[in-house]
Amino acid sequence: MALPRFTPDTSDEDLDRMVDNATTASNFLKAISHEGRLMILCHLVTGEKSVTELEDLLSARQAAVSQQLSRLRLEGLVIPRRDGKAIYYRLADDRPRRILEVVYELFCSQD
Image (cartoon, rainbow, N blue to C red; front, side, top):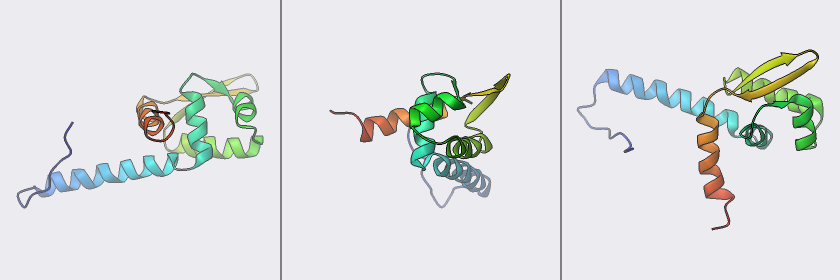
């Protein structure tokens, strides 16, 4: 997919749409820009996890994990599900997975 080109002929409507999209993208990138939130998303790529499972996987306290999950939930990146006293989280859609694949390719692969 090619990136858009700005020209003097770009309509005000198209520019407004681009600004709206840039705001949405910026909020998404801010949400994943914290290493704790990024690691949570990495773990959720493999499937739904409870808060307790995430605490163990991240070697982090419940309060810290809950705070990061709250931000991810606020940004619409994760969806919670309650089962008794346990709360489980999963990715809300495929956007985080797709971004993480690029991040992994750029920063983590050994090629």
